[in-house]
Image 1: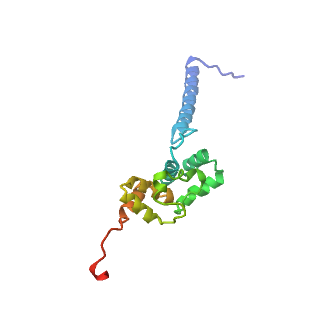
Image 2: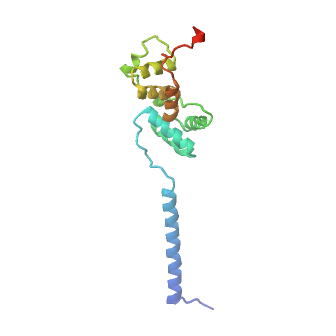
Length: 171
């Protein structure tokens, strides 16, 4: 019979392989845990518009899983509903959920549109601009259309104040 005897050099080599293998497993586990991961609980967005902006940003930057996770954590949506909402963003559809609707209209904006009045968005933006409340006009546009800040700002800037004179030929 031939028995195998392991001497000190063989034991050291075997031990170093075991240590290297354990280190490799630990490195893989650490890499997976930190690569592109999001915290298990994300901080609560300050407003529905901020939540909407975060979800849109994640979806636009190729992180739909994180966008779905964020929606589910802060809206209570089911998995399918959140996935459909994020997929819809790619097709230009807004996310319709009570948690993403703007907070009740502040009194200053309510004064622009009295109860029962159905002025279009441009008319309300025009009134806010006339009162020197351009930033509120941007928030109004974002809340009603789902536009991001830059798009809403461009829209508000494009709305004329309505005080332009008519050309001589149109009188």
